[in-house]
Image (tube, rainbow, N blue to C red):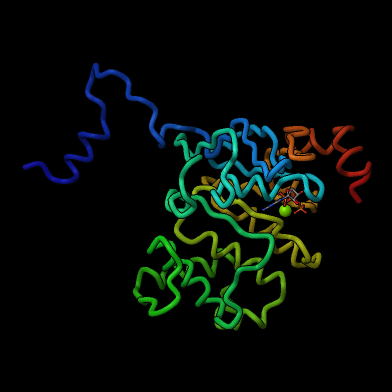
Length: 275
Ligand SMILES: Nc1ncnc2c1ncn2[C@@H]1O[C@H](COP(=O)(O)OP(=O)(O)OP(=O)(O)O)[C@@H](O)[C@H]1O
Ligand SMILES: [Mg+2]
């Protein structure tokens, strides 16, 4: 009788001379592809015909002035507000119609512009709940089952989020920057393939911004992220590719250098100065 490993091996290796297989989710080199994505709220097109692609492992920024449609773009990707037109692919798979929890199961995470932490619990407990929530496919608040794997994963997240030294502190006592770090730590639970960060530097002090940059640049090479950020020094420093949005539309795609030196971007978005 064939063992499980035999079956896996047989399925993984195509027979010689077999017809090439149709592309699978794993075959795609792109983590995220948006094709002509629109999200309308009544007459308002908050996101209007946006196309972009994020390569696997790529660090990507979306910038633009207030109300440009950046958060709404994230909402179309997570399924909180699905697109009203256009398609979204995640690692080669069309996820346009999937409910949010199915997207999470496939390795998509996000952080929010406003905090969603459990303020009366400790840093460790918040991360533990994130670990268990991902394991269950949902957040379970009562009777979490402590087990060894979850504890190990929680300790790993404490280190990654650079919060081990305050693991047993109540979240309510944390500085603002530490709370944002914790949110990122929670988004890292369950080995995500792509994380959407919505303005993680908002309200941070210069020292806290440096800590955030250290955290973002220490993320694994294979993990993709898309960062919405008003602080261009951060956005252009930690990413390899940038999309500028304006009035729901794409104004420009480019490398950080190209975006920084683009006259139209400077005129419309930066008001001619970055400092
Ligand atoms: N649920 C909603 N219902 C109606 N209109 C909405 C909704 N969400 C967003 N909008 C509108 O869509 C437009 C884009 O908003 P969005 O929050 O995506 O902008 P943003 O680029 O994230 O801005 P900011 O930098 O201020 O966070 C705004 O005009 C906003 O009022
Ligand atoms: Mg926003």
